[in-house]
Amino acid sequence: MPTFKKNQSSTPKINKDNLNMAADAFKESLVNIRNSKTLHYIQRQRKKISENRSASEKYTEFVKKGQDKPRLRDADAPKTLQERGSETVNRFVKYVKHHRKPRDERAVRHINPKHLLWVLGGICLVLIILSGVNERFRAPFRDAASIVVVPIQKGINSIGLWLSDRIEAGKTLAQLEEDNKKLKEQVENLTMTVTSLRQKELELNRLQELFQISEQYTEYDMVAAHVIAKDSNKWFSTFTIDKGTNQGILKDMNVIASGGLVGIVIDAGPNYSTVRSIIDDESYVSSQFEDTSELCMLKGSLTLMEQNLLEFTDVSADVMISLNSALITSHVSSTYLPGILIGYVVDYQLDANDLTQSGHIKPVVDFADLQEVLIITKLKETSD
Image 1 (cartoon, rainbow, N blue to C red):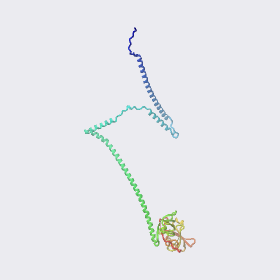
Image 2 (cartoon, rainbow, N blue to C red):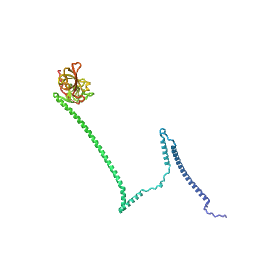
Image 3 (cartoon, rainbow, N blue to C red):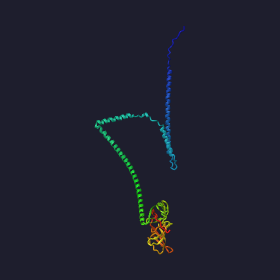
Image 4 (cartoon, rainbow, N blue to C red):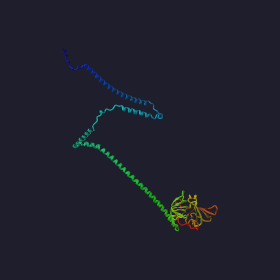
């Protein structure tokens, strides 16, 4: 009969040597891992220090080169030398800022604004209670407040008054500018009114002179007219008036102004007429001396026109001529009415043939300034 051995317990036996070896291996690997991380950290720090040192050495070398480099004359120095140095310094500053160690924000302790508010509120409340209970306690704070607040209040009042003055000055300036603008407009309007009144006054004076002329020649009917155009020269040798056949104006009617003869109508339209004055070089007027009734011929001249003179000719040598003698239109003229004043003698002389005399007269009409004239509506009657 076979015999069976009793089974031993199934509990495994632990080898302490193997366990110690495994623990040692684990510790060694952990130490290796820690050493590896530390090594990496040390390497990174060394690298950063090396980079910072390299940048610092470059900057030191750059400064040293700049100090050792001989100073160039202004004429020989390149224009970009200063710019290159500024760029290098800027690059170095940016590099240092980028690689410097960040600040440990955890070292900065922040105060909660709510807590600060509660603390300040509590202090104010305590001070209010104490100031209300004890007068002695309130007096120092009141004095301190007056020392601090009064200057501030004065300053604020000064600033407020200054601002108020400036605002008021601005409003006053704006009001003055507006008033000045209105006054300028009023001055312009008054100036225009005064100018218009002066023109009307001058026109009234001229019309009064024309009225006095019409009283001198009461035997003639007359029509007043305004000069509306003239030729290009200074003198009114030929000009246009604003009355024509519609107002009864006809060719060969006599024109007067300023108490004397102006000329004759040479063309008449419905609402205008053209007048040739006696100073025109195509004008001839049969005249006579008022004191002697001696006849002469009066003619215009371009050369004498500038002197505002007229020439008379064909006076007999035995006729006595005196200065300032009046010359009037004669009764033998074919177109001019008799008895109209022309001008006064200013000089005379005996002609080269010793048979006649000639001279100059100054017309009573100012042919440099004609604005209104009178047209005698009666034509000279002829034998035809």
